[in-house]
Image 1: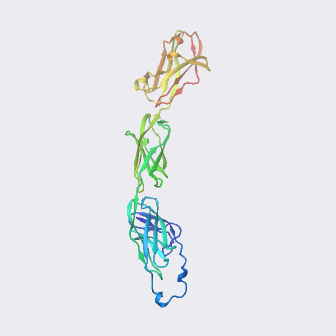
Image 2: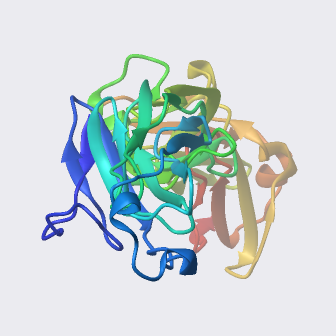
Length: 369
């Protein structure tokens, strides 16, 4: 236990401000303040005492108190002492924890106190020692127990919405909170944010928590939908806790969509849409759920969807080197019945949980003849 004593403290141990530091085993007690006001000399003691009474001292009784008796590590605890016997005693009281002096305080109307903060979970034994003075004998108190305990915690990932999303290669920041048990100081420490699956280190991060809040950032390198948990590792003041959630994160491919007229003969029109998703196969056959809608019109600003070619799943993945996902709109009366002329075509990919939507705008001019 480490105990606190102020640097440059007076040699008599009285400290009226600042933090007192002293060592005691492997724990820590910080002294926040002391009540150190000298009591006024009782008027009944004024005058010249006789030789017979000058050497007579009053017996004293010292009691000690701890409030609260059970405290969270890091919570402020008040040590109090009362000295009684004969006239109101004056002088100093020294508080000791497990035999080590913590603070020395002047009595005020027979009372003294100091505030401390414990740094370890354990049970400590507190006593008060009155040093006596010219009119009162010294005395010591019994033992008061101080029990320091670790606080329970609750950990959460607080990002909204859940699930969240991020582009492949983009940065995503997790926000976490660690709530301490009622009455305990705010938690500080580390929260480990991890995917539930065994993924590379780039998908994990550690959040530094200060006063119950923290954040950390990942840069996921590949697409997918991942579930996350978070664990507060705990420390000398706070117990560990786990957020099982889970929190979902969709890591999405950025896509580009293009459209061409692979056949532009009157009565035989074929339009082909290509969706590039960073090299990934996102076709319906590979459980892709994004769809394509094909548009055509007589001007760049006047295109409309072709009903028979709307909301269609991608059907082909070309593989290297193009790595395009393809949908072909063909054999459709709305296209084959078009007279010769110039038209404008475009395509829109809807996107899905792991692929960002995109379109081929501006519309491309084709000539049907």
